[in-house]
Each structure stands twice: as C-alpha cells, then as structure tokens.
Length: 148
Image (cartoon, rainbow, N blue to C red):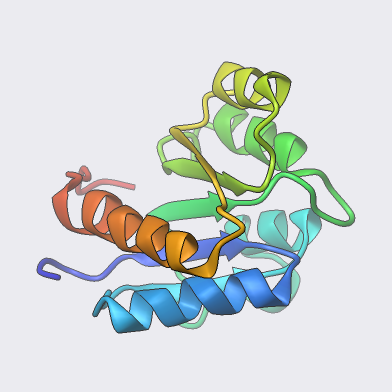
C-alpha cells in the first residue's frame, strides 16, 4: 500500500485474534506499524503516553484504533467514550472490531462516536477477507488530515 505508514493501535485481549490481524496485515503488505495492547487500561496508557508507553519513538500516536468491546480492566465502550471526549484524541478514528452482533452494542458504539463497527467472523477465511478489506479502505483509500 502506498503513502506514509500510520501507527495502528490494536486493543484486543484474545491473542489468537490479535495474531490473525497481525498476520493478515503482513500478508496484505500493510506497511503500517501495528501496536498491540490487551486491555482497556493499557489502551489509555498508550494513548496518553503513560507508564511503559511514554516514549513516542516506541509508542507513536496512532492514526487509527482497532478496539474490541469485551476487554479486561476497562470495557471497550468506556475506552471509546474517553477517546471521543478528549479534544486531543477525538479525531483518531476508532473502529470497533468485536464478536458482538448485538444491536444494542452497535447503537451504543455509534452513539459514542465510533467511526466504524466490524463484527469478527468466526470463519478464518472470512476474518482474513475482513482484514484485507479493512486494510484497503482505512489504510490505503481513506484520507487523513496532516495535523494530530
């Protein structure tokens, strides 16, 4: 894919799902930088550059957040709400990547200003297809402003 690579923050507690995302990005030649945290609190620590994420060279500001909903320590909806309420973070696109097809979860996510809502397919081939489509849309075709 062309353009300057952006940092992607993957917030996913299921290591198998995180590995599928990682491998699919590699297989689709997604040149962006993937950073993975496994709980909601770590996601906020990363975004606010606290604790082990204080160095912008190793924990750069993400250009997009892939956020699971069911997370330990802090739920994904809470993380989403905090991101979108913060003037310094609210322009970062947040894509919900979850197993939940519940209408209530979708409505709540969009009410909290999620930029997209993707349901993880159970089938590996379909999950691969979803990540491929995500890569092209969000990382190749979507336009981002230059300012943070």
